[in-house]
Image (cartoon, rainbow, N blue to C red; front, side):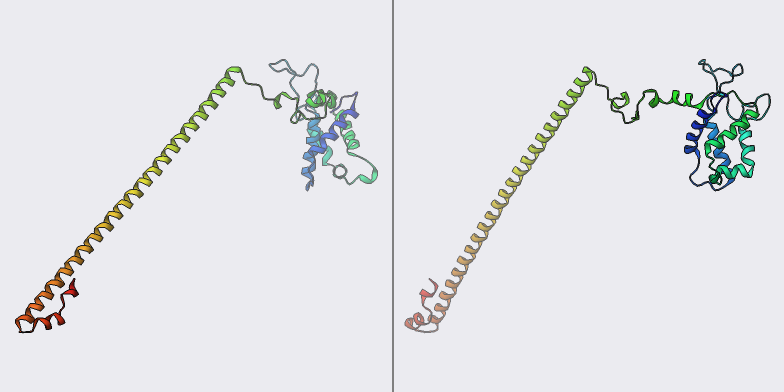
Length: 261
């Protein structure tokens, strides 16, 4: 809010605050009234009541809020705003129905200021001074926000100390050493597994070769046995023919010995 000396600066600040406070699509009269009250509340955060204003522990003047700033038990700023908005004509003006007459929100806020002066509420400082004093961007005379300013200390990482850098270097060396040791152990295990695999393959080959040799020997034995059995049967048959009175020439013709050699 503005004091006696500067209502225009105060209303300008309130209009700027209105752009942040007014909802995009107000649906009820209650919403518009609350918006107007919030708008004036933004400008009423810094109040200066000489002689009546208390101080905090830090020595700063405590604020007098817009719902408790009545003079000598009179209306407060909130009550003045609510009474003004309760008028249907004023409500329509605030909602934008008075555009044809050329009145702006700044002019309407001027009417509210007149009602505040009638309620003897004249102790408020200009809102622009307090707003600019609390704004770090305006104090630095810059447009770039601190959040993206490259030279801001919050964007800079403080360098580590020498001890911390040495610790980080030792940790890096230790990590690389452990990694190399794990790689060597893995390679040794891999070589050992490959060696065992080759050894098992050789042993399997030797066993298969020995088994094949045994089978061959067994077959040779069976073959020899069969040949001997055939020779015995031939001799028995020749002996039987000889005992039956068959001539030796006939026996040689029927059962030659060369057939079993």
